[in-house]
Length: 340
Image (cartoon, rainbow, N blue to C red; front, side, top):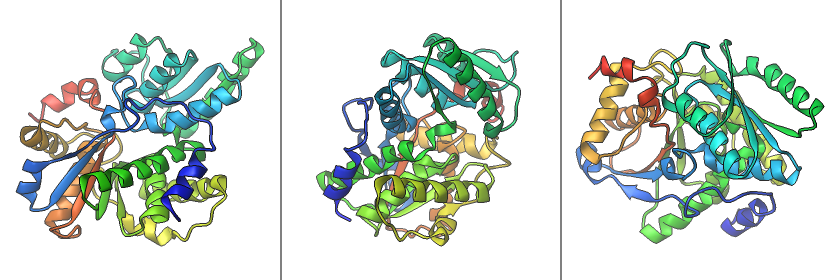
């Protein structure tokens, strides 16, 4: 399907402009490329411009556009206490004059630092809940929405990570941006590599490249969530997003199984290990680029390892998606310091 056809389909959906400068830069990692013997670029989606930036801002352009088009005045969302998505949602909602309620998984006694501290600084209404999974927060958000409606408010619920068909449009739009930047830079990316968790980023990238430039392979590096659950979520999002766009696709679940890479979660989502901290130090010392310990640190470790194992062949041209989240370093500074 043509670039312009997808562009015209995307433009039909309500959206707000949140990404600073309308697009994020692509930088060549010269020193890292020299070390690893292949060309590695980074898509700086840590510079999306709302709060501390990050990939969720792209999804929020469509999600909050949808909320405003429906006359909603309060956004409710959820995440772990260190959630980048929660902070970006709070910042974007406040920017647009909307109220926001964050349902964060954690402990009431948690010290406000990192994203949790920033959530407070942007004036979010924070509800700490002692549950283990995002699914357990769904009825809590629904109850809050009912209470708000009784008080005359019109709430809009965004699930974990903004992983909905509407949110997924944000990374199909990002594919359009990357393809445009390829032409401007005179490069063609063989691989797109990124961290995958709630699945919206992977679904948008996989579907977008499949439709526009299918020769590019999209690798989602798992960061510790159960792999089968990630694949199911991504597959469901791909199909529901295609349905939303009223298009057909020939992506297969087998493609996702082959391109959702396990082995780099280091014991589970949110687990921080020496290998991850060493990777952050390695890239930081070579490029002055700061990765985070929850997502991009693990994804970069996986990228380097896949190159060493020749699963990504030497000589490939790689685009690493920096999804943001550096404030997690300050959320978990006590753990990270142990590995310095």
